[in-house]
Image: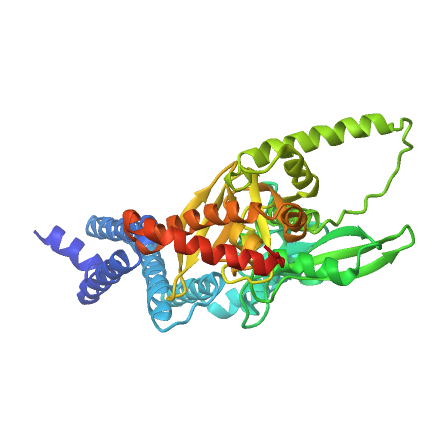
Length: 513
């Protein structure tokens, strides 16, 4: 009986129960509130119980008469138990208490305080064991100097990592550029900083290199959202007015929803240079909100620029580096032209609005159609627009018809596909657009302007009566869709709509019939 009492009294005292309760209490709090690091918590708790078991073994050794071995074993495991308790205390302070009061110190700060606590605890136990700390410190100073000289590069990296985090130079998630390498910071360690590039490469930068040389933190500005200005370059012949080029491109980019392109500050087109070869060098400058898809977003912006210039009849200026060895003769060009006209006439035959026209009249219209491509997301027609007197015929792609609601939202009315047309009221009566049409995919259209249709109306005014009847029917159908009106109740209104629309067409085109 005395053996067990002696063993228990050696390793277990009044403070042991308090320390065990403290360890279990801190562990319970961390287990409940800090779930993302439960594996590390279990490891620390397991290490503490191993040290507790080691102290129990030292008690058995003491009861067996192995005094010296028992003292050494007990001291080693007390130091180990203290290390576990310090680790739990560090987690409690830096992972729970400080974040709860909105303080988020760098992880390296936690490591430094925990390491200092480890050293202090180790020195306290050595002093408690009766060792002279002054001799240890003197000896350790010489050893430290030798180690510091031998490991100056490593120490430079460690101190660099500490400085980077303490002065908030870079943070996890920042995009940085060092020389010709750019990527996102994924970890800041004691010795190095890890950066993942867009090419799925992980670059390891020594912290001392980042401290000694300049680097760019992309997209970061004080009290501003993360966004990075990009430049998309293109050339247009000086035959085109720069003001027109800038207006066309600005309108296309600023009024289109493009993924990862910021609305503020507004994208803007700038004439950057004049080349002696006869073209102006322009740049569309926009702000990228997600720095990962930089090139894909540039590509989308370029496509919107190309389609906008094509719709405006402006061509990109391309440098010629080769000599053309063949020349297309006029006959071949005529064949290509006639083939294009035939394709356009085939498209016009599908449009109900032109069903009463002769082949010659359709050919005249086909000659005047303008090719108008739209990139996905472009606004083809805007509700309330009173200036665009154009009819569009979809050749390929899909477009969606939206109605702006009083609450500021959008209501989907219809989806248009190949062969559909819209804008007939704006073309024939000058009426404001009743709905907005947005390209759901890349869309190719033919655009018919008022001037082209006016020539045919003045040549054969009777067409006005025929198209007025078609417009009256389409207006009635649109009223049914927009206002949920009974279709049967609209038949008696078609005649009234017909006379009103016909009068508007005559006035809009100045027809004297």
